[in-house]
Image (cartoon, rainbow, N blue to C red; front, side):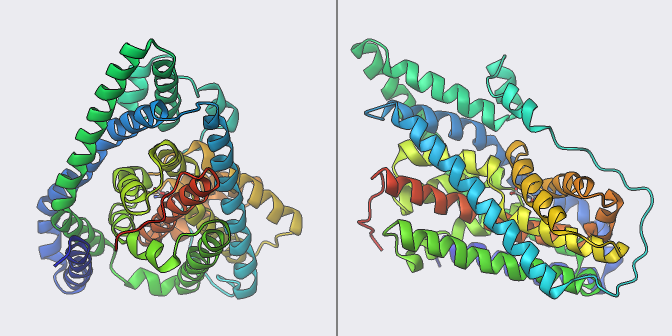
Length: 407
Ligand code: ASP
């Protein structure tokens, strides 16, 4: 059995067993929760352990392999533009579809009172903090944008050094990069176990009953996620690259399964990067940069949830939204995605900002929090697919993609 099939099987078993325990063995579930959690946490920690070294070493070796470092600015500009553009499309789709379906209309919800949520960082502070004052702190905190900037500076500096030193340093960074890529293989080997326990815990604590209460919201988000997943990414790949669509989606399976199980695009970076470089054959100079950048600033799935949630909450409170509110939602949701890292549940924090902007009470988030984990898993899979699709588009425009696939 291939690794992907094994992971898929664990995922399905986790869903089935977790839901059964949730429904029929509530007390046993409580007792089992802690040991199950330990294994899931170990697996997530192993993935997280790799994020910083994989990102750092692959960007440095990607940059040192560029014949022309001025192309970096171009690659960065294209990636950022496309990431924001697809987020804009995603949230626009969400608002249009949700306005038609109108989830939450005629609903009668009880609102929880003691509900607090943090606010995301303002965009100016994200820009001010792009250059790390202390790179060690950036590494220890896993501050992705700062690590990217620092790695690019290290990479460019290496290219400016004397030839003998340059060759030596290039070799060191390439070997370290290979070391951590190899480590991903080892962790992937344990993925079927890790995924099983992560999903088991989620379904033991969530169950399906909450979905039914919020079915209109849940299925509207799901519908728009599916539309965006196939239509937006499919069209971009079809129009702007020569990647075969069936090939793309089938090669993304591992990254999608990881994203789904961990609900974190940041924790999935090692797998996404490996898929984009080794399977989709995007050149390291593009992938090493666009994938971690995407995991931080590209959250199309999250934007979709925000669009639908805004309309749902407005309906639940009986508040009418104007066209100008829709425009505010689009702007704020697109910008909010830039400063927030791809970790579980961060979409709700961004949603608070969107709701504030259009004068909706952020307590409304309490309405949807019960089913957020399930949607988080699904939208993270979309976020990660977006990172890979845009990496292919940028690489194709830079002629840094190889279409000689081996099946
Ligand atoms: N969990 C998502 C991600 O990592 C972000 C979110 O929607 O909460 O991409």
